[in-house]
Length: 143
Image (spheres, rainbow, N blue to C red):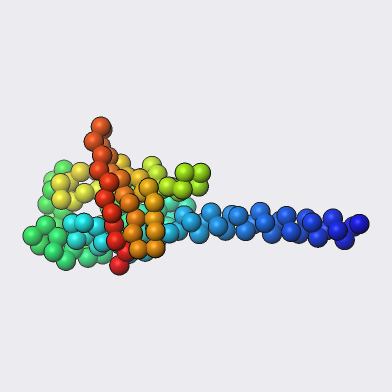
């Protein structure tokens, strides 16, 4: 009897721990290198259970733009775009299976937008950027 209870407890513990690993693996689907429609290449990484993204390449972006010339803060308009963190504070919602509550900076226009990632597949994800009542969904492709 005691052996059966011990075995049951071990199996239950294994199942609970396995479910946490699956949640964590699902949240990590967005980690990696992606190309955005404007030829900005970014790398998404995880820090303190939130997701961030930085620009890693600008091949063909906005007629060769390499500086943050549209930044609303004039003191930052000479900053390099390569290495700039443009995605901040994305959190994984395991119930909805989405990444929410993030922001994305659009250097083409110098705007900060709300960001949500609706889904991530092996080679693509759907990002939704919004500001006030306006929103747009775009597909990012894995590099």
